[in-house]
Every structure is written in structure tokens, then in C-alpha cells.
Image (cartoon, rainbow, N blue to C red):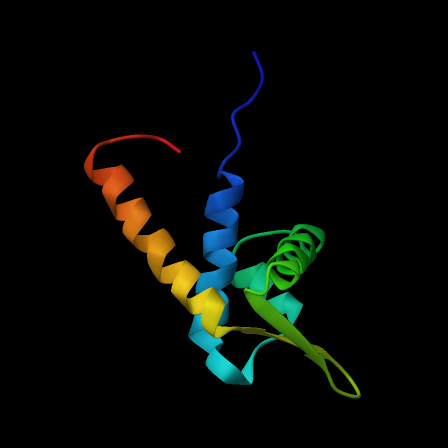
Length: 95
């Protein structure tokens, strides 16, 4: 029997977007995202890249760091995801 993952990929994406929402337009570095979303650095980077590819986040580099910010599309997606999650929990479906 294989071990069930702690969180689904959608759960991890939701956590990354939540961190990005918390930091708003100023953005934050990958280390903060990884720590606050409880992900490894590699996994956080992978999830951020997926979100960037779909236009839900942006990355901006300065001389020392790369900052990740949520886009307007990302905010709308996150809000819809939260509504979906609330509905799923209300009817007790595990996703």
C-alpha cells in the first residue's frame, strides 16, 4: 500500500498563492514562500514556475533576489479555489 500524500498538488498551489496574496504587489522571495507554505525549496520553485506559466504569478529579479508576486488573474483564481474548497468541505469530499 502506497503512502498517501500529505497534501494534493492543488493544496500546495493554494498554499503558495496564499503566501503570495499575503505579500501583495511587493512580492516575496522563494525562501519565504517555501517556509510559509511548508514546502521544500525545490517544490516551491516548481509550483511557482507552474503558476508563472499559467499567468497566475510573476517573477521579478533585482540585483540580489527574485521576487514572486500574484497577478490579478491569480487573485481571481485563488478566490474561486477558496470557494470550491469550502463547497468540497461542506459536502465532505476529499480532493
